[in-house]
Length: 350
Image 1 (cartoon, rainbow, N blue to C red):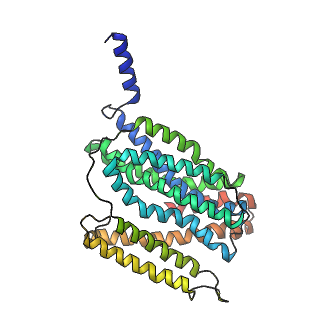
Image 2: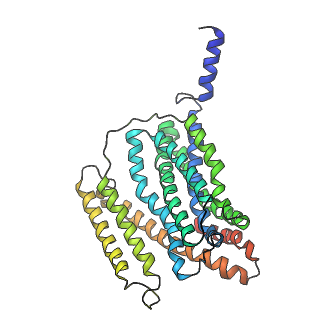
Image 3: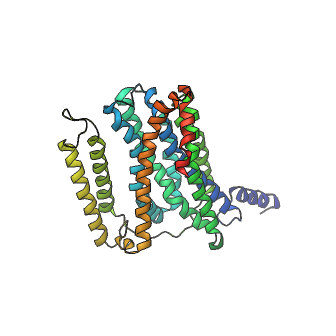
């Protein structure tokens, strides 16, 4: 090989930065941090923009019959993320973490484009948004499930704590960045809430496909299909029952006597009990029940659950109350209320 050819080959290899390149770990950290940031921004940016989004599709967010649309715009994304994140992490172990992660960036970006192009109004427009948000959540789960594993593969043991810490900080930062960004963008046009993901997603997708490499050891394993199915259906049925239980039914202000609500609540709880039984008996569970024998693990997760329930309920009520009542009554121009509501809600994310 001539000196010129050797130089050209060396230049190409250096520009792509393979897994053995000393700078590859920083490339992996930068890209996965971007992935975590966009996934968490997308959750809070929609939260603060809900009133503007619903006004944009000509749907009154304060009508009792529309509460379910509001709730599922938020819950659909979080529910799908919670159900799929473990399974997608397992798929990453089996077929390659980078492959699943890259697919997640692509899915997330395509869904952002579809969300911004909602062609409908009223209930049809809300269902379009909910459906694409659910698909987008699968992309977000692909990113979140595999970013930490990619970092672990790329960094030596002495630096992993620092790298994972940066990744976690990005996830936390995304929560309050989304609140302020969503408030500012929704003043202009509700579609910009979804447009903002597109250039970031395109850059992240191309960058991930060009620069990331699978360096981890693949493990032969099985997907816990029954566990995933019972968890997903159980949570969906339970949350659907609660959603329709707080809506008017049969002349009553709430619908807890609705047979479908009762069926959802009872059926959801039964499926979650079945999930626990399945996880305690199979050889390769998605959530080993033996973990809860550890008091620190059990109490820590219980505290996180209770905190998330309180914070989630408070956030949902505050976005409506601040933008629709408190801020206008205290002299804020109605068009400025999304931004100020986002600023006022930042302490809830810290």
